[in-house]
Image 1 (tube, helix red, strand yellow):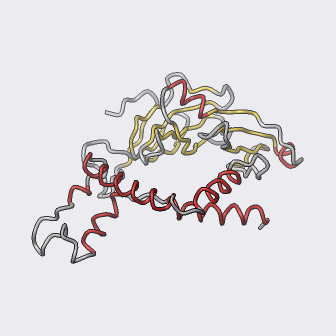
Image 2 (spheres, rainbow, N blue to C red; image 1 turned 90 degrees about the vertical axis):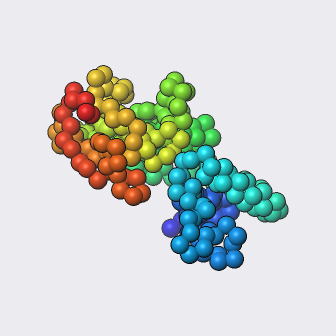
Image 3 (tube, rainbow, N blue to C red; image 1 turned 120 degrees about the vertical axis):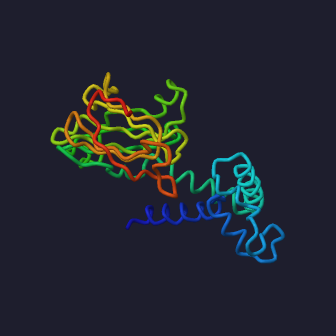
Length: 246
């Protein structure tokens, strides 16, 4: 492992530890763990913090914001915080860092690159020969920042699944703001456009895979309540091209 990569890993871990937010999902356990907490319910009594189970509820989000603000204020007052944050950001945005391959297939290398100009990322491609030369010539497949601006979204690229053997027809997973729920859209890497009348799955916690060019296996909340306790789908169906989800 190179010194630069080692420093990057160490600084990223340090920054994550300093800035890790508080999430509502863990808060109920925290509340129950302290018997002296005045908000802790007596045995058999209703839990006064049960509202935290509704992780997107207004009251739960207000609780999270209050704790995040308190935590950030305390951490940012440490004289080391600003310097460590600046160093880590400089490393993460360094244009000289190694462009690690996200995919390697058919003599080409795909990489999703983020920097100061493209904080949301650019999905780009170079030939294997170009990549091995040390000075890869990149061709943009999809500019996530530009797409977000056009569509008025805060898209986070969550990956793609491309149909073999050509692997030019891909299912692109996009999350608005980086949530677990995502939108899935069919994309042609040859024309670098979304496929007209192609597969489009509306936002949800879902999994999808190709069966063939006109068929997908899709796991999602087909009917209200068809989710696990943590909100993930457990029913998988076959979806044909042109079919509606109902």
